[in-house]
View 1 (tube, rainbow, N blue to C red):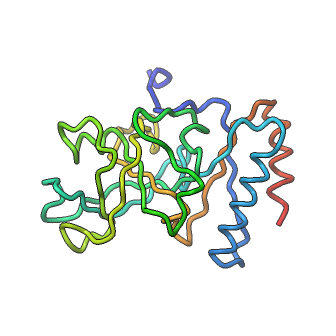
View 2 (cartoon, helix red, strand yellow; view 1 turned 90 degrees about the vertical axis):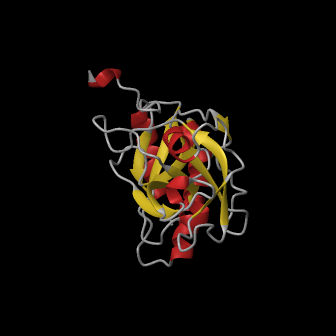
Length: 212
């Protein structure tokens, strides 16, 4: 029965909104628009947590990227194509999914900071067989060489989530900070977990989204 399936997160009482930054703005301006919006919403009375993700846990899809995992036989000759999620700080706590190991992203994970990633449990099983905790291990999104070039460090392990729907299987997925790798064309979805009635929160969020 579909209602008994474990999604990997608590979907109830989480509201989603398309951030929808003005397209006329440059990529850096859209980033600042998103950051200011998240800060304002987090400060609103009645907000338990706020984050964002692209494509996000409710939108039935993911991006993908080729990567190398140094030491893994699966990428010794060719890179592996895996689903990607570009997310903000507090993403996992906002959607109600506790990380079994490690930490989630923070505002200190900036474009100039060390590149970091969170991988899910299926990723660990495929690329780190026999290793229960690969935090601190390296992956590389430069797939031109077996050893890659710029390393990305695994800082957390996420539960498997069914991003593509109830009738799908969990895929090996990599989560990266939107601040470090968000494609310029991507429009993240805002995620708000309220402490008050959703109808009241909807009006408050709508007001903040309309501000420049």
